[in-house]
Amino acid sequence: MDSVRHASSAPVASFQLSPSCALKLQKGDITVWSLDGSTDAIVNAANERMLGGGGVDGAIHRAAGPELLEACKKVPEVRAAVRCPTGEARITPSLSITNRAFRLPVAYVIHTVGPIYDMDRHPDVSLRNAYKNSLKVAKENNVQYIAFPAISCGVYRFPYKEASRIAISTVKEFSDGLKEVHFVLFSDELYNIWLETAQELL
Image 1 (tube, rainbow, N blue to C red):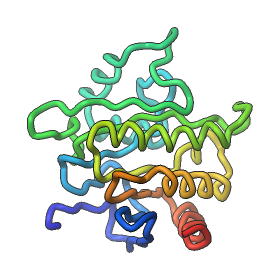
Image 2: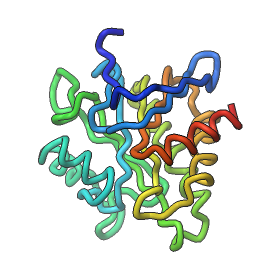
Image 3: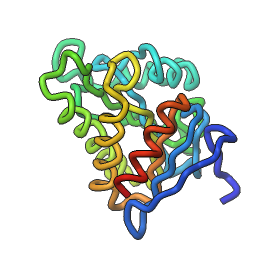
Image 4: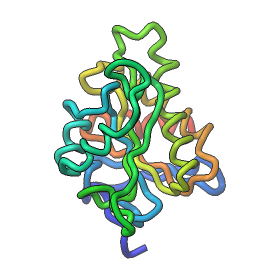
């Protein structure tokens, strides 16, 4: 479709997760990714407070503008200073009838919290839940196209290869009802590992 905006001019590797859902991998900037602006969402690798942070979280908040922080503050706390526990997901609604999520080209931002690898008792389970619950929230809100970063692969220090296996196997299992699942990866190293894993698993 003419409205497709990829995260960079880098090549996009495509695989089939199911007869009706494609997996697409690319290196680039997730904040500029979009498909149709009405049924698409990017996933923010947030922290439990959902008030912004470093890495992709900070980049998405900077690109979205202060309205995203205000929307996050409206998400109810489930306990003191925790809006989204590790492994869960929340969605921030679009601001207007045009379905633009703040200053981003997508309709929605889905926030999930991945595990801190060295501090989580079961980081593999928590990471799987982060992907699974993001997909669940997407489908509950009629999202057809979703883009993930490499959750927990920055300051949370999840080993890249292990993370890629969890990510791709989980989206393969839970992608029913979606048309496309994208991974927008910030480095050549991550892209190459995700590509290798997709070739192994799909």
